[in-house]
Image (cartoon, rainbow over all chains, first blue to last red):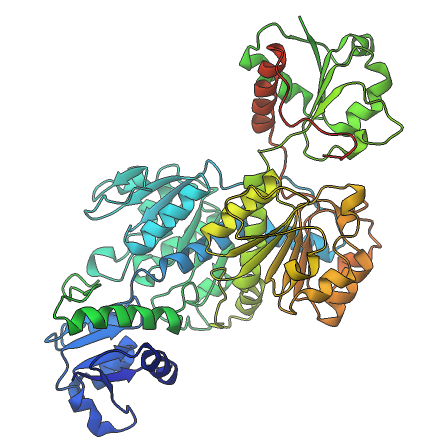
Length: 308
Length: 308
């Protein structure tokens, strides 16, 4: 019978959810007992907590992350003698809500109208619309694909920039390596859902930003390393870019002295775009455990080299 | 050959659009010449402008409104010896964007996070989500139906309250006259797209508001007369209702001294939720003119008695 260790800030919640699922042939270890770490064949939890205990997890065969991002476990210095899977497929909907919230905040002039209200001023300025706009998706994985589906629902035109895959039916036009300038030209909205890998580092740089029209909005829901911070601040300060919404940063929490806090037309959302709701993540674990228990490959396995 | 008079603040834009459409057998009169009013068989424009000239439009057979709301033309004292059609089908998408914008503003705590940013404070408060929430639609006409489709896309449960029709496939549960209390019980969001008619007057009253949970949000994109203003202010002031977003009012522009301006958790959007974009409205006129020219009944004909 496999032994499971839960390493999560919400371990009690996850234990209740997994017990309620009555998984066959699974024993859940008491994480409070340090001696139990060596017994665990399966670990389920946050990548940073798993990393902290990696040396003690001597029987580890499979680790299921509660997060999408698994950077803490990717350092080349760490062991890779186990299967690592991340959380996927559950964040796309939440990310779509997030991106929609800020695209609409912008088009609908929500903050401007709210300011007018403070002055008891009727502000009938014409509103904008998402319909007919062009959105560019940097990365079309499970999150990008759901963003594409949502954009299409609102009758936007969808461009996708990927490394290789072209299998999302909601993308109107695909671009690949070497085509970044064409991809970015004329976009109304640019959204990055890129993971942190050596290849995605500083993809959003001065050259890319220079291709965007001055009315464009940039949203980052992927990882902070994809953005050249200095170039983004310069574009916003000069008015070359209308706005940016950043949920992720190279350093989190963002340090109080960081210039982003006071950059004009920049909104900071403190890595809240797609929380891991335990009910959803537990369901994902249950599905993957049933595969594992039957000897099938688990879903959403991470390639340690590729980084996602 | 029918003579058309355009009575709109955007008459020049509409004239260009209709000329470009090269409608068969149609002559567009010069609206600057008062003598032309008596020649017009068709009028296309804003209901308030049409009303002002109604006595002069002696040859009028058909009036196409550029707006959805045609209240200025519904007074029992006015002539009804012509066909009146309003603008429909083009506002649903814009209204959906509007409603989504404010539901997400609420769930995503956008204003709270923006305030935190002003203090350079990392605010990782858990976000809410639309998924699994229940939305109640007061009125399921062409706008309500599009709201239902959008709500379903975001995996909400959809209740509809209508006078008679039950033909929207995106409504999970229908309620009718006498069932308002059940309709409202437990709703997360209540959205009215009701027109101004004697029957819809003060539908959103103290009794209805009392059925909503304290965390609920009310949005009005229909007409202001559907709301008991005093009851709504009381519910917001007491905390019995979490928030309201009002785009429409009994008196517009809302007078500067109106208590709505300073009611807590109330947002005012100054009748901007679904502007009549000339390209869309002109397309609607073209479609309807082609029906008219062929002797078919026009679409979206208004019933003067019913009021929509």
